[in-house]
Length: 85
Figure (cartoon, rainbow, N blue to C red):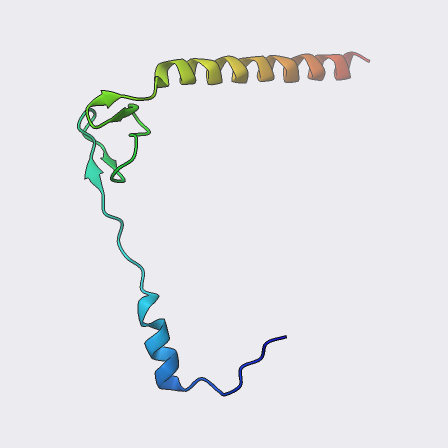
């Protein structure tokens, strides 16, 4: 197992840790919905990137809603079956 051959001095430690500072995220505005987003990424709110629709969020949200309703119905059926027996 590797062990340090010599103790790291205070100055060396501080020089090394000089690059550990947190950097504030650079945000840009979406050209379609005007919300703050990370640059060079598809807008998670409207699905647009560089003025073009890349993701069809309405379809994705519709599928998620169907899955949620099916899961809630299944839970309700299990609860009814558990209380009746």
